[in-house]
Length: 450
Ligand SMILES: NC(=O)c1ccc[n+]([C@@H]2O[C@H](COP(=O)([O-])OP(=O)(O)OC[C@H]3O[C@@H](n4cnc5c(N)ncnc54)[C@H](O)[C@@H]3O)[C@@H](O)[C@H]2O)c1
Image (tube, rainbow, N blue to C red; front, top):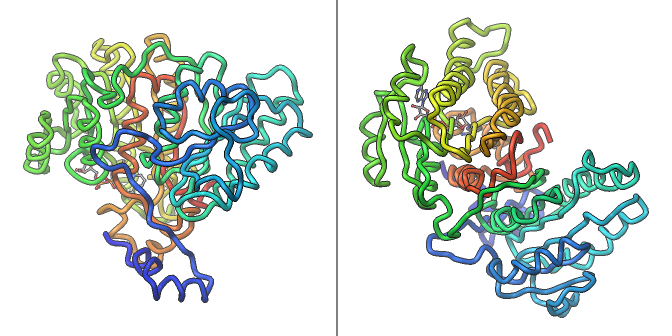
């Protein structure tokens, strides 16, 4: 569905009117375009502690315009405020900040840069997970980065985003994959997120086809977010198996044929769903995306048992049963990647969605609980929690709620199915085993549950 306000606010007349009335000013977001090679097209500035040196060694693969700022021992040419080019990407290593007095380095680094950011610029702050540090003062300083980075996300303008990555000492090798994602337009609709990266034995071999040789199953793939996920995984080199209800067979088969994949018409709640699924995956599976989901909204006072049960069965029970069946049958490949489509409703709760929010919060719990079980096989499991995404689901919302859903976020607009798909594709990569048991919000830093 088209967001007419976004178009209006960026027209000549609209810009003046919106400015005069103090209305929200969402900026058009730059998205990844087919054939693009470099994650950052423009200037990347790098600074801060020792991880900045590590980033410098891979920076030539991220951009061909590298600058340093307030970073000790960096080779890159210095960026000077007021003289240097507009910045498309910023990386600040804050992992060395070991007490609260040193937090002023955040202000000293970022303040001079803020007026020099290009549209849709991406900022990444690196730190060490507070719980991994034995020194309480250092732990406090590192925890403070969360409040800083989330506030920065809320202050940035013009489609810019900010994230915080807590990188463990073993995760140096995983930085490239994470920076390729968070500094590029693939993460256009993600801001204010905090993720932890651990070590991971498997690596991407070819960045132009990071999922080559991997077989991926996507449930609910006939339309909306699921269709976008299947397309994006296929773009990245995966062989895709698209699953949806038998009623959607025609759309499913057409898309599968277009993507050179296979269709599996199957209701994931059928009593023999696990048997049918295993029969449809004789060679096993490397990537499983549990995307099929439904809403049956009513306030709790009016919630009927069938509304409650239907949502639980599709959204929560089926992913548990099918994942367990794949594990028991030995059908999950080594280094498997499992991604569960949760929702910001599952984090914040939502009026009229007690069933849906419970099912989606349950999925986040599923990722947390299963991550240690799967880790011994090199496998990871994560939840992706979309906020307001322009699909059939949100087009049918009442107008007032729809407008609120779009505007009440730092980016001031809804996301697109491909924004969610890019996050899923990144978490599906071999090197993304560095992230497990976590929930990544794709919500434009929605105020809901923030
Ligand atoms: N659209 C949003 O703004 C939004 C926000 C947060 C989370 N999500 C989640 O993202 C996922 C995809 O959402 P969407 O907007 O693309 O929804 P959608 O309704 O457009 O598509 C869902 C797909 O799942 C399939 N499906 C439903 N029940 C099934 C079953 N029993 N067996 C097999 N397939 C089944 C449907 O046929 C459909 O093709 C869902 O899990 C949803 O809860 C969406």
